[in-house]
Length: 248
Length: 250
Image (cartoon, rainbow over all chains, first blue to last red; front, side, top):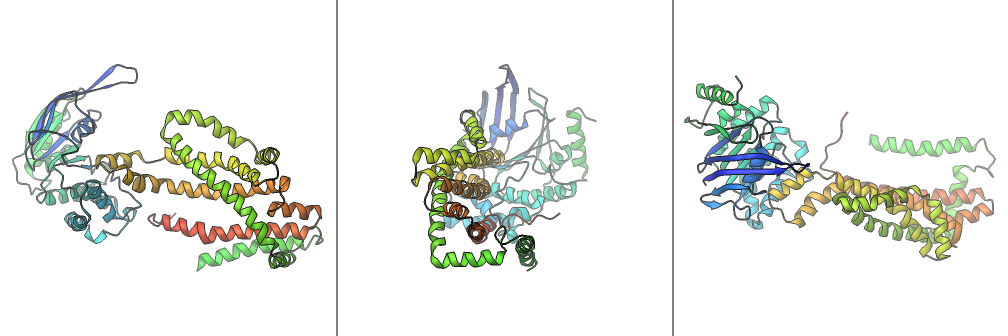
């Protein structure tokens, strides 16, 4: 589905009552099944954008639409992968994925095969009956991804999902993500502060300015989806993104 | 197997120490475990032990359950709402400070020689501690998990059952342990001051008769029952509830 963000502004009230302008006129579009990365300096309102896209808060200005309809978390399915896995450690892997399906009101008969399918997709079907704490950090994050994908989301939001993993694990996870993204319908918005990660994963990279945030630069990556992190266009895009961020 | 051996060693070291110390004292001052053990068997055989044990346990159970129910409501409210925290915090702190002995005396003075007195004393003494426990438990709830459940639009019944309760259970269990231990200490005082049945009453009567054998037999008997309860009920329940947690390794 096409995700359109148009002229979105958001301000909060500080504790002393003065307004804090977080987002100022943010606009971007993610094509159906597209993969957009938002890259920005810390404190640039990335979480505010994600909260808006998740429908948890409403914009003060502008619109957010999915296939032309105003975003509504009751009618649209939004999958969310957090920085940390945020799993229910007292529930098995299978039950953790099932949690999202039940929350979405999927009938019991349908849930079991769907849990199995999505765990197979992320390569964890052998671990369905394990408890999360017996898995590695990378596997736990994959359970979280499976949970988000299980509800067959219209939009999949990913909030620096690999930033807490060691570099080798993160690399493997990114490769996995590229592999199974071919098989899912979701339109993906991926937030990161890692320019190389953005260049490697995305079709389109949006660089955010410091607060009040707008889109400072936009890069389209016309490259096959099967990539290597050392590919020339990945490195080039990384350099361009870093340039737009003001880092050389 | 090794755990069982350690356990057996630990238990027998308690009895062994008692035996060694008892060897240095006349039996009127400190009788050995064998003497006390036989006396306990006699008390059990006459049925006395069970009658008074039952009276005591009933009082502790009623007082504890009432306090537990109220503490879950009050403690979770305090953890979740600033206003409730502000209102009840001084109550909890005052309640924690007043000695159990005072409550035992006051309850008997107010309610006389009735079943109400010990139950009230237990309730009042156990409540602040259990409330403190649930209050801290609620405050330590993982907000990230609650947000996750909200994002996935989990209904509140599911949030309670799958997200909140499992996090509060360890606090509930710890509270149950502490509550029972505290309830037992208070009920004995109540029974000494103003009741005509129960383990505390019998200990006091044995004390009046200066029968060291009886005082110790009652104490050991009750302790043994609590000990059995811990191993037969509390530990298996706890083990079942935390089987998702991998063993700690240092």
